[in-house]
Length: 373
Image (cartoon, rainbow, N blue to C red; front, side, top):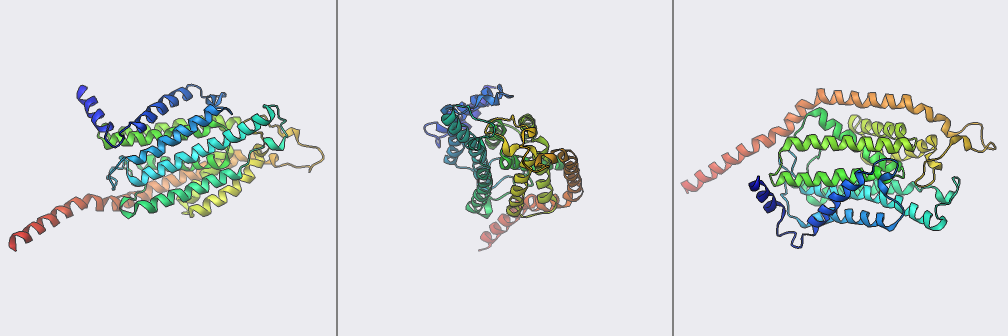
């Protein structure tokens, strides 16, 4: 056991982090995660309009950005559970996406609380969230991720999920959960916990991949633990979305996005432009568009009688059958993936398995040539 701790110390405490900035930030954020998760529920992890919330958002942002000080291998290994340059940039981008959504919630909450002291009416236009910022955050993150992929070059590129050594069903589940994360950002339910759980998944995954790179943890437990983190995040969001009367709506749209991208191969920018429009219309059906910032007390019966005889919220009941259809599409897509994937996986992994043999033959051939000259 002492030998393990010595190896862990040598692997984690390197000269690259001379002043231990990243490690101190990591330790502080780890304690912060534990504290916030002890407050899951209607208290929204005790985040609020005060400056303390903004400070913690900044600290978690610094944690992700400070990872750039470390030198890591340019190529991803075959098993796929060690950190590589493209993943690091994507990790920063997507962590900042959720942190930006948290910051947006905080800014609206803080501004409104400062102006009104929290005593605003449910129909106050100033209390309504601005969801256009959510569209900008999601689209901006796509651009940032693509820029990161371009920056690292061809040698350091790898599909985070497809190139992971794991059961096909598990990889499909991982992929679908990515669409749920993006849809939660796009719909923009004003709950801090909804996004903070994604920050935890992203930052803690980067940490355990670093542990794997230092050979401190094996591959398979990392994969299963990542699945457990995604499941935990799903149930946290289930609670938050249910409070906002939006669970079925958000998950239906997320499943639809997964089907269009994974099953129909729709281009991602076109996909999320389409989902932005659908999210806008979907909010109308649940009353989320008329829900004051950080409160979920909207009642569709409070609509003015002078308006039309119908309201968008009349369509809210349709989300039950639509959700069932979306689940069927995703599950069906997973079965198709299972039937088609074996040959594709074999073709992808075969060059990697043969590469060492080719290198040995080439090395032997060069050695023979040197001997004959």
